[in-house]
Length: 77
Image (cartoon, rainbow, N blue to C red; front, side, top):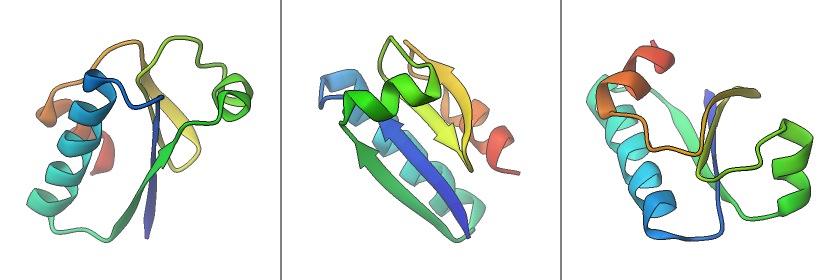
């Protein structure tokens, strides 16, 4: 099962990223845990200083922007 972490404090962009990640998982028909992380210590551990951040299986895929649904799907393939 894939592990997807959304790093952010709950801003509109963070919520949009979470929605896109869930939609990507659904469209690809894969098993994944989508987890919201709002602990700044975790952000720092990943080296993410601008939110929202997207981490897939422990690897930072984006920070400071909301990637497109297609980008997220590519990263999950």
